[in-house]
Length: 253
Length: 283
Image (cartoon, rainbow over all chains, first blue to last red; front, side, top):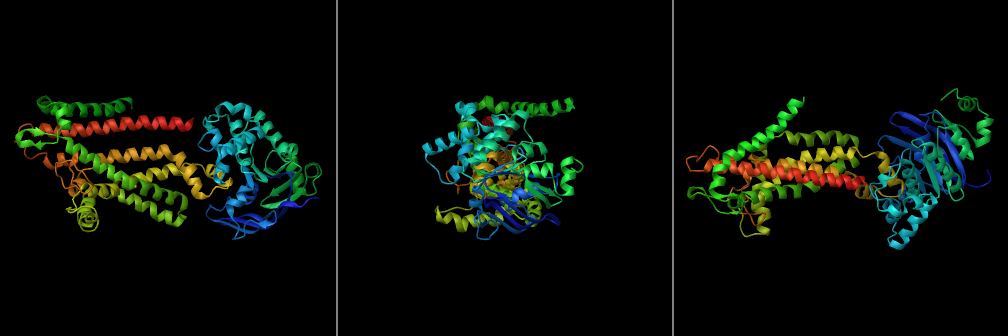
């Protein structure tokens, strides 16, 4: 890794109730690359991703220790401002969850919260982000229609546009294509690849082919521990660890 | 099953027809228009104006909803969104317990606490004299009575909102309060309206507790400190007595018919509004 890491995780431990979900995680997520977190279900992939933008804050019984540095700033520092941290990261969840409002308002929601009020600026932002996610031509005539009327693939792209509209540095994708049809999946994957020019992207996926198609680096997580981390080809084709080997060959899942 | 369903639906019709049949004499005698709009209530002279009672019902119900709805909304939001698990476990049964208390106890509580409270502490700030027996007292007592109903429905609605939707808003850098205001409440709006409708329907018909604190004076209330006389109270107070007065029982039946029609109309109108609202939110 030549560049400085964008997210640096140091001795991260996550307990949910009595369960020790993540065990002493240490990882550096590279800047402006796509990094995929792979591993069998229940291994802690999503937990790890959600701990990057403190989405566990509102869940009872979750205890987090250790550091997560974003741009060198510890987001779990008691003085850190959570909205500021979350603004830096766009989250794309498993299924699209459009906000209960129009297409336009979905994209404008974030910017409005962060103080952009002028209609002109909002119009421009909305158009920009809808173009960035390839939705503009499909929805430009019905921006005031409810977002729930879009197809599920379109909704997921809208959610991406909504996340990009607040000007994040990092995109977090939590199995973002698992609810989508193959065509929409391909569109989203291509978007990830083109977006890495401007953003650092962290994806959780359980589809190895997808990890291979889109990512530059791969983190293999098993039973709450990071087993292996490295460039995609290396981890998938020439894994160093026995567990990784078994996983990529499909022996454990 | 179909037979039973039809039977319960037709029951509504039977009640409606029965009430109409029984109140027909007074309708023929005085006509709908006079009965509904006249403010004079002098049964001994054969004058039956129901306007004061209709207004009494509306005032008490309106006050109850105005008091209860914001409180219920905040309570439900607290229980679902903010309260730690332990407090939640204690709060929920307590709220439900309120709905199990017999209305007459609320009535006594109203007479013992709310009436003096209004008479001594609240009313003197606004009007020269009030006995405390007023539509406000009725509204407050009624608000407490519909509180558990609204809270439990709204809590249920709030619980159905997926965590991922809240996360989506939070992940954009919105605070929890912003998320509640702009996303959660918006998503829950049809449910909140439905809860309000149910509560209003229940409030319309509530009799005994309201009757005990309302003052029961057959005049149109002009302020919240005036006494009122809602329709159910009228029926409960007089049915079985004074039946020697001509047309009196028919007039009481007409009161019941009016209440029946008000609730029916209200439910139909709110159903239409709810359907429109849902359709609009769905796109």
